[in-house]
Amino acid sequence: MTIDICFSPALLSYYAQPNDVVVVTDIFRATTTMCMAFSNGAKSIIPVASIEEAEEYKQNGYLVGAERNTKRCTFADFGNSPFEYTENRVKNKEIVFTTTNGTLALHAAKESGKVLIGAFSNIEAVVEKSIELGERIVVLCAGWNNKVNMEDLLFAGAFAEKLSAHTSLNLDSDAAKIALDLWNIAKENVADYLKGTDHYHRLVANGLEKDIQFCLQQNTLPLVPFYDKREAKIRVR
Image (tube, rainbow, N blue to C red; front, side, top):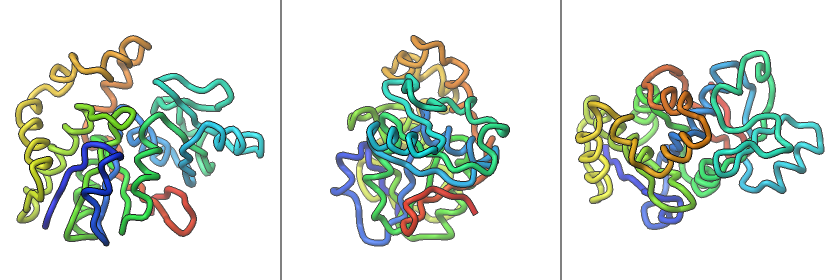
């Protein structure tokens, strides 16, 4: 099996090949939040790239999660914190979702062979599903405004390490080796390693330390959301 790591949605065209299984990750916080919504019974998620599209859905009666620059948009029912998507609010509901980075990464990947939603919270489940689905895996890091960020790279390195424990693994570029090397440096205390990073500081400045702690816990939400191209929705089986 082959793995590659794409550091940013802006670079995906340089990494993508037909029939890839693309694992989209936005650790702080979109992919973690989506996993939490499904864990609490959400029926489906409609990812949209723009605020304007999300507002239009809201006017048509949909529940909407919308965030920009770590803050919930004023018109939205939810922001981008996993703790907002409680069972009593999301069970059996369809949710429209737009975030600063995560949903843009999803739109970049939507024509790939298969698209899975990956976070530390479901990392083992996504490893197992990736092995089942494909021979070539690309982890797409959502980053921050098309720039590289550290937490997504660390997930990608952890994912590569766990994948290698299950199957013979070929690293398809230097990007995969970089992510794996970083993970080996940081894995003893990931939160400590991230304390000097941009997004960590943004979340702390907005009082979201609890979100950080939750988003770095492994295997708390053992399900695998996937993008259904026919319906342009995210679902779980």
